[in-house]
Amino acid sequence: MIDTTAVDGTCPRCGKAAVSQLEATPWCPSCEWNLEAYDEKRSRPLFGWRWLDRRAHHLGYRMTRRQFDRLLGRPLDATGAGAATVITTVASVVLFLGVATLAGTGIWLVVGHPFPGPSILLAVPLLALAIGLRPRFGRLDPYAEVLSRDRAPELFGLVEEVARAVGSPAPDVIAVDDDLNAYAQAVGVRRRRVLCLGLPYWGALGPQERVALLGHELGHFVNGDPRRMLLTQPAFTTLGSAADLLRPAPSTERGLVEMVGAALGRVLQWPLSRLLFALHLVLVCVALRDSQRAEYLADELSAKAAGTTAATDLLDVTLRVESMELAVRREARAGHGPARWRAAFDEARVANAGRLPQLRQLSAREEASLFSTHPPTGLRRLMLDGRERHEPAVVLTEGRSARIDEELAKEYETVRRNLAW
Image 1 (cartoon, rainbow, N blue to C red):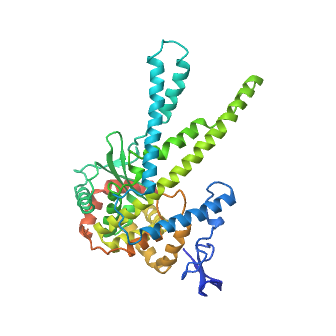
Image 2 (cartoon, rainbow, N blue to C red):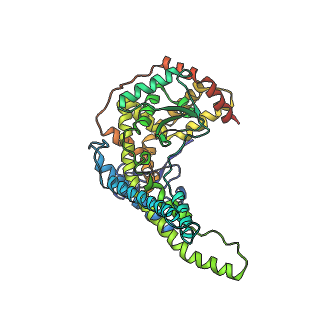
Image 3 (cartoon, one colour):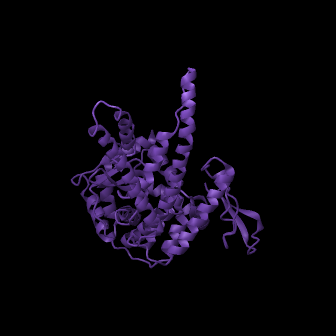
């Protein structure tokens, strides 16, 4: 149960009563005084040093709010290249060329010099480093259950309708799993588009919220999210991988010479590894600014497909995902399927409806971070509220939604057993 408690005292800025949710540090719901505060007892350590975590929180909060203010009321389309996009793209190209240079130099040392010879001593580590830093293309989650069109024609048809509504190509693979989540990604050298629906999440949503979920996830194929683009992938991985490769391993040497050698190695490796990791953090922080813009655009595409009301309702679901998980697990243990999952979650929604405005505000504090892939849920909701309202382009009836659940009956039962266990 989520508790809202009034706090003795008033806001020093506007004189209104301060409030608290979830035992968080109080803030003013009227003028948002103290909403920026770093709440140590509810924040996960980012760097492990309190003073640094506090500074990082305040910087992340300010950057997040500044981006929100800049984007509010402006086009969110992915065609404009902002500073974050340019920096991420240029850095990715430079890093890729650096890895290619390592590989090319290693190959040249092998084929361009007599073998065996002293050149092999340099060629091997260069090639090993290039292999360790090579671009990763991703792969399909082995725990995801891939569906066929013959197995779920209604679901495939709905996905294709929503894809047309948001201007996205249809996914090449549709899969389901037992996570309380959903995602879209491109995998492999051929960049096959994958849509994966977590059945506990999907099963607890209403029909139009399901359309909103599909609209958001399929929107990631056209919203310019740098996390899903092959060109910008090196910015997210290369420097971090290099830092891991150069990080000194714990010494197990016992001889004096070996211990001295290991110590000298650590003197060289440790500062270089930390420098690369620091550069990695800076680059990822910059790249994620554009990723957060892409999330706002995916929300707008969700609203175009399902209607603004359904898209904002889906964002409110995100604020209550813990309540959803409790409801779904409880009903799964009782032997019930998705119909009862949804009913139980709807009951929890009604019970907590009055707390939503403050939960939205609190999310701006607790979800703001230098390294968050998503903007705070409350700000995403405000962004949609401040834009043109949309009527549904795709309407999912209760009957059709029920037929989709019937198609997935076997998968639902597997997930229900997993949740019950």
